[in-house]
Amino acid sequence: MKVGFLHSIIRKEEKLLLEEFRNREGIELIKIDDRQQFFDLHKNDFDIDVIIERCVNHSRALHSMKIFSDHGIPTINNPEVAETCGSKFLTTQALIKAGVKTPRCFLAYTPESALEAMEHLGYPCVIKPTTGSWGRLISKVNDRDAAEAILEHKQILGSYHHSIFYIQEYLEKKGRDIRSFVVGNDCIAAIYRHSEHWITNTARGATASNCPVTQELHDISVQAAMACGGGVVAVDVFETDEGYSINEVNYTMEFRNSIDVTGVNIPEKIVDFVLKEGRQ
Image (cartoon, rainbow, N blue to C red):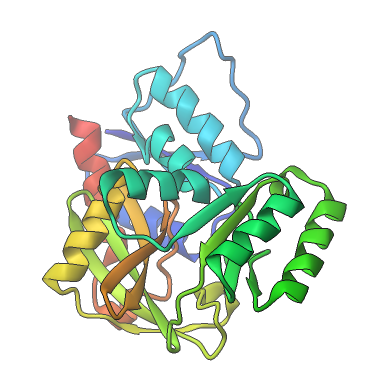
């Protein structure tokens, strides 16, 4: 089987996946660096059975997977999953449509309507760009004065990322949230992400510990993954007094800090899934 490995820089996760693929018999790895690749959109000259996507750049990942997929090559994940998970708005819409619990959210197009939405939702609330990762450009808005200042800054910045106002209910995490890992129909592992800061991304300094995968956590994680199209995803989960609530679903998941603390060989699970999809 020929496996295309679409990548940007080779991080720890990519090294672990490449090692796992190389340990399998009968697998030919074809590395595709998105910084060097170009496509003739009129030709299908790809001698590849399946693609696993590990790009850093969302646009490159989405466009590349669309090209491969339209030429009949299965991609992990598929472009529809990338498009949905790459947009916080589309993710929220998918979760709501599927009946998966998620924090209340408002969308506005002008600073004036965004301020009205925040006043309606109540403070504190959270404003985010609709695309982005690693907890960047996210603001906790504690009162009207802060709201007016943040909205003015976004208006002056003027980029596409700041032209849509995605406003989310603030949920008190009490020092932690959960990231669960879903491969196919199975929640294979989960971690608590601990931080004194309200943003609990490990990229921002949060620490990880094992989170037992209860049936409740398994079910809502898989439901969230399936709402966004399934495949190999990481699900960010809030703990509330009314049960779990899904914050985001990530389609090019990072897992370097989760293997040792969970005891689960996450690269092995991902490679198993990729090869299974390639054989179908």
